[in-house]
Image: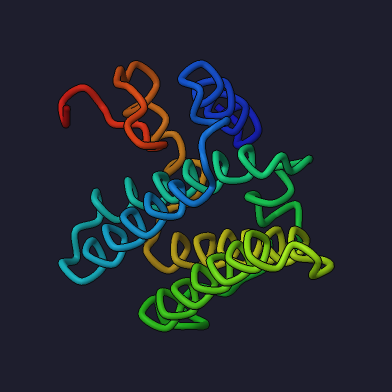
Length: 179
């Protein structure tokens, strides 16, 4: 499947599960959870976990973008469409990239806080889009450093969730096996 096809599949899945209408705040919890799993995959040199986690973070970013009602989500999460497509492997260490990604997650969180508590601040939604794009660029570079690619990682995640059943609990989709 192409990257755009996978993005559309994830969007359709989240719409069918009504996750696209849930709170972006709850989705941030999921983003932090999946980012932690990505870091654990790197720390334990567990390539399958690392690949799955890159895909899972992309799924979360796609859904967060849906919840924020952003247009052109593929441009936010596909670095080859937003100028991040040129990268030399190992130019920046994966450890440093993971730190940079954590910073971007914090900046998304900070902008969400502003959006909620200071709705008069201009460009807050644009800032969130910017940080989602940056985080996607980080994932792209991590994937290259770890000898994989984002399309393969997103396909791994898609194949895991496409038949997943569950329900919404306090604004978070919980799979049946965790209920």
